[in-house]
Length: 270
Image 1 (cartoon, rainbow, N blue to C red):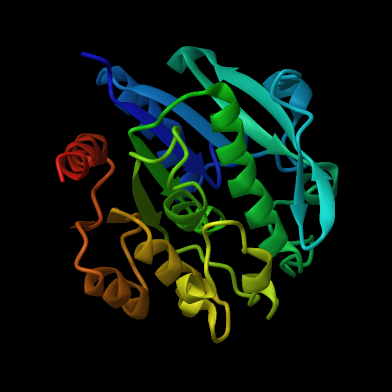
Image 2: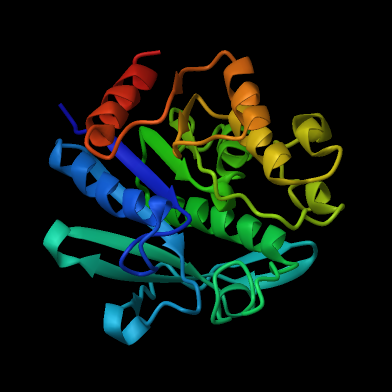
């Protein structure tokens, strides 16, 4: 019997970024799931404040070289990889000079969030999907962590619904209490359009495109939802529970790997 394959799409991972709630979970969870016998792949953005030499990142030439169009602009996709030797785990990095060369993650030195975080989220998620397709690796479960991954459920369930790599994948979204403050630009929804996506799929984005509306979009196209932080915005939690989909409330650091593994199995049995 083939092992279950789990794709982790992560906003942050320690030690490439400083320890935080999400970065620590996205470091320890894949290792824990791998140790339970599942096969994993893990992706994150190659933010400019990641030290490539110290972390021994190198470009994967056979995966790089693709271009993606966002709002009529052409952006080269660069794929890099590094290893966490102690965990026997590889991390793939989505890179592009326009989006990920600046020496910050989502905000400048003054705490002002970047205006193009919307485009960066599109590029990151589409970059992950295209790379997985190029690897010809078929995930049974796709687990998304953090708002920058919020578009993955939509793309997988609509634009790539018939793709051999994703047509049978179950998507789980972990919602964290670390949302962005600066609303996305008003024409964001238009930039999401790909074959398979209709305007009616994007009704959650009809008003102001903030963390709550983006979360609701992710919930709509996920098969399961996890509360990643001890605290969860009441409106976002209500939206998650209103979907009627399997919902896993916050789990303590001592138990979450087992709880998440059981949740994956529950979702796969649906």
